[in-house]
Length: 216
Length: 216
DNA sequence: ATCATAGTGCGACTCTAGTTGCATTTGCGG
DNA sequence: CCGCAAATGCAACTAGAGTCGCACTATGAT
Image (cartoon, rainbow over the protein chains, first blue to last red):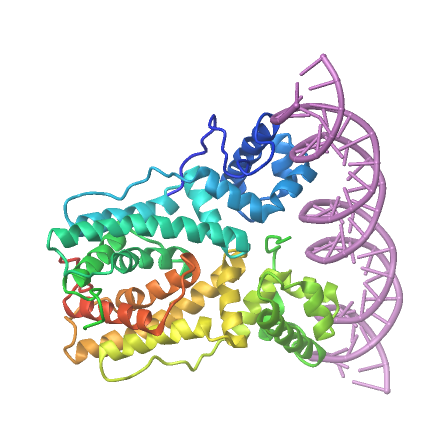
């Protein structure tokens, strides 16, 4: 989902289009975004304040407001900054296994009480407050969904699902109930729950529920 | 900023345990909660401010803070205040039809541009900001889910699904992808999308994916 | 009718978020 | 090395959220 902060890497996420990308500006960028992620992990989105990020990073408050505009842009930039571009979907050899592993990763990514889980949950919460964060999250999840759809493509080439199956929809069917329990209904999610939803989605795909026009 | 519910913030919201439930107090209660819902419909949760609700309702700001504690309790009370206790799940005669109608209602309930849609979306957003709102929404949705599970019970008695099918899980599988697209992935939802997810869930239930232990 | 008091109105107060004008630093091209 | 402009630091400022003490009003009981 969302990786740990890169730390040494000079994140060119926001600085690359600047007319002065080097030196102090780059240092400030990584300092501020690192501080943002740390604050997110410790206090969540509700406790994220520009003043705290500013003093923690050693960058002046006005500078943070000028460059990121507020908590919105701060979080959106931090989201891109920490995005793990090397993530790949599981390859267990079967669609059922792939989807089950995927659903498990989703559930654990938000409940597995580390800093990463807090940050991931904070991003979801932030998307309800800030259009910039919502856009960033949308882009991030759309990219993840597109990569995940590959497991359905592989299943199709193995003959597990009918040709023309909508991979993104199959993945949505597998992971959406996990998200629903976590963030909408606020219900606990067990590993068995996640596996059950993944298996149901795999079976639906196999019987053609997501192939081309809705045939029934 | 959003403060934690201090003590008995939402105490006298339900007038029955108040020591002075009649007259002006009751008038103020309905005036404030009506104003809260109107403000929610017009400006959403992000634009919900105690000052605006206070001046709109004619009740003093300090009174609103004293009785509801802030936007948290205000929205939680408004959610209970406006809950439709007479709602019943659809009865089309088939599980596929019931689930499809349910998914359609969910999608339309949030996207169908009226004041109700704005309020419903605001409640979801609020649940990410306020523990009180999250609890209120959890209770509301758990109640709705329990009622919806009845359509699966009816299908079971008709022989459409195996005995022991988990009704709540079938309903979750049908509506969760709609919620995912609306609030997590921020993707548009068409009527066809909603129907497709509902049909897939119905087929899964029919083939026993949600019957007792996960049979595979 | 009368009374104690819960509930309310009022306004001033504090605290924090966010903005602005100006001086200073610093990266980058010459 | 030098100069310009971008970026930053700084402090004072505005605006809004939330709190508090006090006076007052209306409710429910006597």
